[in-house]
Amino acid sequence: MKLAVYPGSFDPVTNGHLDILKRASRHFDKVIVAILRNPEKKAFFSVEERVGMLTAATKSMRNVLVDSFDGLLVHYAKKKGAAAIIRGLRAVSDFDVEFQMALFNRRMAENIETFFMMTDYKYAYLSSSLAKQIARLGGDVRGLVPPIVERYLKKKKGRKSL
Ligand code: ADP
Image (cartoon, rainbow, N blue to C red; front, side, top):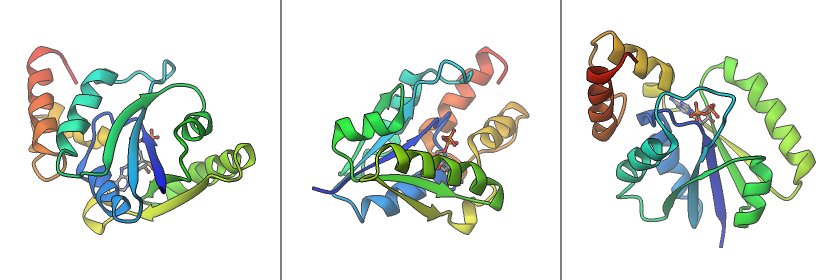
């Protein structure tokens, strides 16, 4: 069975992430979306909230699972028996960091291949930060994030500043 891990912060998941996920899931038997528990990076949504949003947004994708992990990605991927790591690419600015990460991951686990997937042009400018910023300023995030995330963003906006 060919298993892939799609790691990231997903704070929150956007339609750009979902597009990558949908396309990736056609090429692997199973894809695990893995949310990094990163104590160094201050997240807006808790890991539990992010798991909840991703689970709802991927309900119709039968071979997609949602999980979280901490520590090294390659350790997690090995533990799960993954053959591949999926990453999405938008602008050239993504390239440097992704290149470095992919080479390091290969050095640590040469049997796990990183696959880069090009964003759909509709989402080339889209990031989780942008969606949060638009929501904070009272803009419409419809079409940028799944409906469940729209609701979470509205709920949070009512309670505290984004
Ligand atoms: P990270 O903090 O690890 O970059 P993100 O949640 O921002 O986590 O992104 C996870 C993955 O999804 C990364 O590979 C990122 O490049 C990709 N990604 C993010 N937004 C988009 C988008 N709009 N289109 C395609 N890929 C995207």
